[in-house]
Image (cartoon, rainbow, N blue to C red):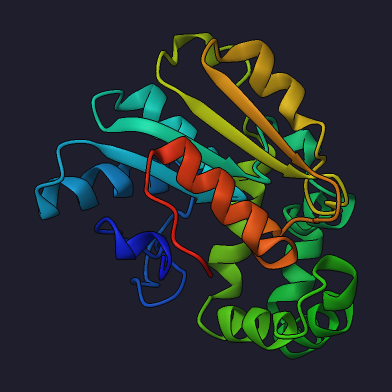
Length: 227
């Protein structure tokens, strides 16, 4: 956002249950977040804009393009699942009721486990602290129930309805979402552009920041600004 914001206005919203957004809701499903994006744009008077989403945020962005096609000018997805079965096994298990119940009562252990696993997820040395900060602002209920909803998601049958440009960015070393999800995106969206990153995992913007920004600026037609 710091780089792109030098040439255009950028907005970031926290999904319900995450960051600074409200945490007292009955559901935290993917469709709730899709509706949130529409409401967010409506409240701010944003008729249409490019949507950029990482991981579940990309799945939500694609879903906005399907359910509220007038909102999305372009879509960029980064390491996002098209179908929930592409999630890593530990995440899929976290979305099941027995495992979720255990984690609900072991938040401290869960956060420590994520810190220990961080080097295997992202090469950036700042990542463990960044991840822990995010988890500290997220309720375990919203995290696990949103994962359960994401696990049940399958956009493949509807992707042909998207008639705007979509760029899919996938790290070949991604161990959170199967990077081969680019195949489903390319087969389903007629105006799709696929960018694969050899040295990146799930967090491409941290693993290969310069190349990531360059590809983003090119797709969004934003003048280049050096990091």
